[in-house]
Amino acid sequence: MKLQDLEHAARIIVEGGLVLYPAEGCYGIGCDPCQHAAVRRILHAKHRSWQHGLIVIGATMNQLFRYIDAESPLLELALADWPGPQTWLMPARAGVSRWIRGRHASVAVRLTDHPIARRLCLSARRGIVSTSANRHGLDPARTVAQARRALGRRADYVLSGAVGSLRNPTPIRDGRTGAIVRNG
Image (cartoon, rainbow, N blue to C red; front, side):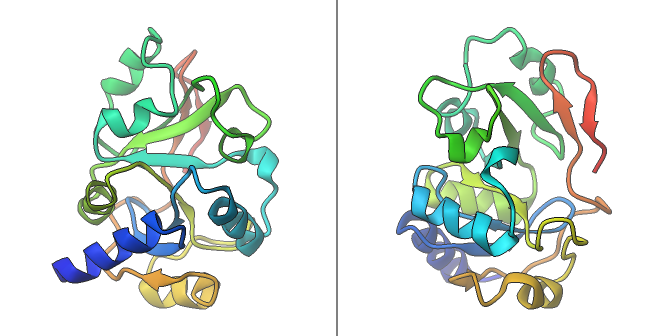
């Protein structure tokens, strides 16, 4: 992956576009979580209800603090796993859009250690939506070719690269209890 490809993908996200990119266990499709039109495009492309909520990934904790309660004592549980391929449901900060939270009072966040996803967040200077690049209920895309077939026409840019070693999307843990609510 060339630096100019990464910078181009980040610019598309900042400008409200959608990018396919490799992550820990599969290809993801992402956008700026604060741009509701972009988030709605992802939900429409995936045939996914807004009520489920979406994951936001970041390269730094500051990128995630915009979405979660930074004072939550629950944060210590997540910090023990991060950075890494664990997604945590944390209490949502006041004002986080329902397009991100879904029907929940929490928001799913991950401090990513995937090199390309991390660099994309750093280049965009923000956390980004991270949901698997597939239609809701179908198998996630593990290669760039699969991602292109699944959602390539819906994305504004495809950032090629290898996915991480996970065989499935990241597990999701409940920040209140530590219990796994989705096992990949």
